[in-house]
Amino acid sequence: MTTVFASPDELLSSIGRDLGTSDWVTIEQDRIDLFADATGDHQWIHVDPDAAAEGPFGATIAHGYLTLALTNQFLPQIMRVDGVSMGINYGANKIRFPQPVTVGSRVRGSAVLSEAEDIGAGVQAVVTITVEIEGQDKPACVVESVSRFLR
Image 1 (tube, rainbow, N blue to C red):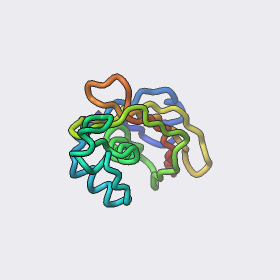
Image 2 (tube, rainbow, N blue to C red):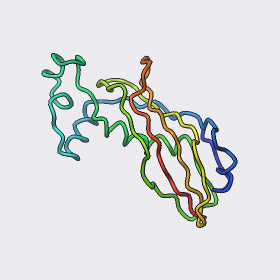
Image 3 (cartoon, rainbow, N blue to C red):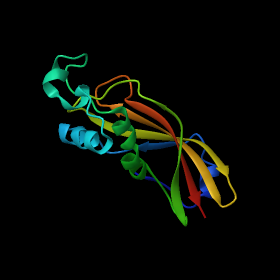
Image 4 (cartoon, rainbow, N blue to C red):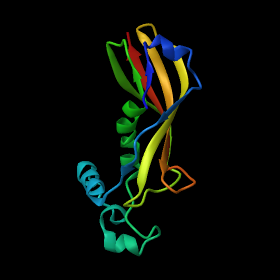
């Protein structure tokens, strides 16, 4: 279920709020290969299933930045801010990749509103997104995502 804020100003009084979780996404080799093509990162650990089967993880793994990029898919499922002229991705404060995502794994995002501040034209929000791997204790990615919601 999506957490809906009626306006950017509503974010200001919601710091620390758990925003919920996204749907699960299965990481298939096709997605990994497409990401490798888009970025030029064709390291064997990502794109060579035979070599990766003999490697440290026993299978190919998603690029860390592929896992990070999925947060752009997850966040709109988790939260929405109404009453804005536009929302923009302003960057990230901190990104970590504690656990690799092996091919065939399912991942989803969960989020907490960590910070919110009035910036005049709107509200800048820091949402901490944790990408979990089904059945794993450690997350695949934790990112402090910074967005601006303009009035």
